[in-house]
Image (cartoon, rainbow, N blue to C red; front, side, top):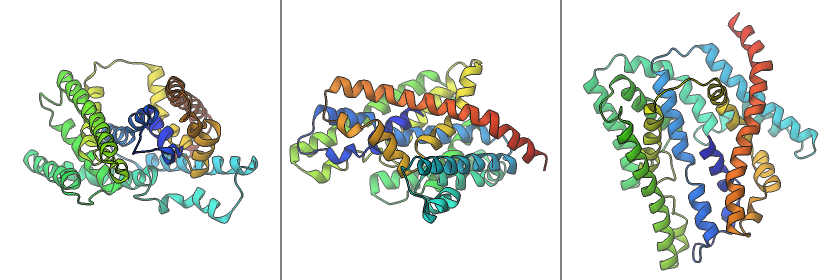
Length: 335
C-alpha cells in the first residue's frame, strides 16, 4: 500500500506537467522512479487475494461488507468537502458517491476490483473442475494473451477486471500446485531484485534515449514496461514481491494483522475522488512546488508523506471498523 501511495504522490499531484523530457533534472529522475510502482503493487494485492480466496467461500455478506465500506467513504468524504466549502453540492456528485462504481469499471481500481470480486465463486468452480495439465495450459494462455501480446506485439489486451481474474488464477495455481521455485525464498528474492532493477533500468534508459534523441514522444513512454498492470515487468515485479511475502517465515502479530485489515480502507480514503486528489497532493502536500526545490527535501517529503498518509488513514479505518462496521455486519449476518 505504501508503494501505491507513493505512486499517487507522483501521478495525482500533476507534477508530471512540469516534466521536461528534453532536459530532465535529477528531481525528475527521482520522481519517475519513486512513482513507478503503483501497478506492480496492485498485482501483488490481487495475487495475495487470489492465493487465499481460492480456498475460501465468498459469501454475499462479505461482498456487502466491502461494498458498504466503499459507499460509506464515498458519501462521508463527499459531504465533508461540501461542509467545508471545498466542493459544491451537485446531482452529479451525489450520483458518483452512491453509484459511481458503475461508471468506472475498467477505469478505476475499486470499480474493477468489485466486478472481479463478484465472480470469485465462479473462478473457484473452474479451478476445482480442471486437471493440473489443463490449468497449466490455461495459465500459459492467459499470460501469452494478456502480457506477452500487449508488451511485445502492442495488442491492447488490458482490461482491469479480466486481468485481475487472470492474476487470481495464477495465484490459485501457485497455491494448489506448488513447486520448488514458487516455494523458494531465495529464488523469489533474486527474481524480485533482478526484475526491480530491470524495471528501473527500462525507465532510465527510455528517459536517456528521449534526452539523446530530443524526443518528447519517447519520453512520455518511459513507463512502457510498467505502464499497465499486465505489462511484463509490472507483472514479474508484482509476482515476485508476492512470492517473497508468501515465502518469508510466518509469524503472528496482532498489530500487523490490524494494520493489514485496513489497507483497502487506506486506498478508499486517500484516493477517493478527484477532489481528494487535488486537496491532498496539490493543496496540502504541494508536490508541484516541491519539484522545484532541493532534491534532499523532495526525497524527505516523498518518504514521510506516504507513511503519514498510511498511518492517518489506517487510524480512521480502524475506528470505522470498530464502531460502524461491526454493528452493521451483526445486523447483516442476522438476516
